[in-house]
Length: 428
Image (cartoon, rainbow, N blue to C red; front, side):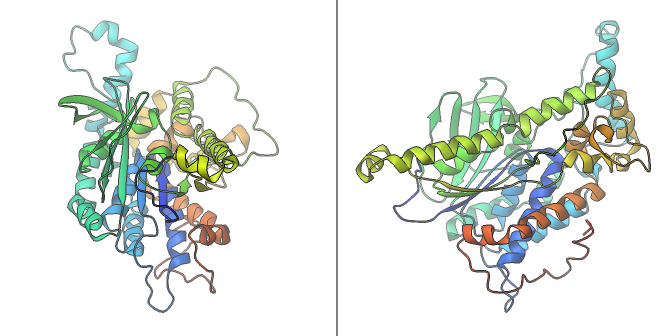
């Protein structure tokens, strides 16, 4: 793989954060686990971020930008993310009140059913299922975009990449900031643009199709509408490599472990929520494994080349480590659907999200119908805290792999982070 900033023999760690809406709370838990592994018991600090290149798409882009803005103190950066995700409620991301839902989701769903009657009466059609203006305010409150430039200048960060998809040109665009001059690259239907990352880039990258409105960004002297970067690239591994990473940690959001017994097929015609959830999973989750497999095949090919051929080709081996959920996040979401605000639950019930009955255990198809769709929109503390706890547990269970990957020694007992209560019972 090529890398514009890589130096011969130099190690450059990259962190790749994939997309998945509220599921991205899992990433924060993994990062907290890594921070606890790296924490110096004498000083209580981890020092700067162990990742020089950060690349993210959708909600992963937001997490990556937050990490980049405080890269000089990895522990403080992770704790800031934890504080936000542990206290989440849907109203911080999208309008979840009755008036807000009536202005977007209800009109949208009604448009499907009665649009042929109302097309002459409705002048302004809703652009998305939900209004995410609260997210814009949250981003500006918790991320210091100017400090990203400062961290780059001080050398605590080499590059930050945020991916989005253009609805106008159909191209996948990587917007990036870098410490050194790295020439933009172009491939078939892919383009890289070097410019300062702003809230608008994050909103574009996280504009889940149909769910959140698209965002306009200036590119090549014109304005284009952009949507979720996961539509073209679920895990931005390639941008991280272009920006110089030769060791990449990927935090996925889909359980890769196959159950011994496949869940029984659901009976009856699929609801709109089931179809939408399946479509979103195809966008966000299903291509990560294939991307990693493709990278491993390239690594095997590079290993067969002679040193001379490898030098002339510009290719180099890329070491990867993937951490993914050890449990199905759909099943976790099914337990928390009832925590959504009533107007949101009412709207989702209209498309087929049906909460599981109380006392009914999730087994196979017994999870709430439409829970996959809900899992992307469940910005509620009970759900996000459970995902964070799972992420931390998964990271700690693979401590030797993580430390070996980061070229650190496991010198003793993992030092708990002060204030980390209830990590065993799924609460923070």
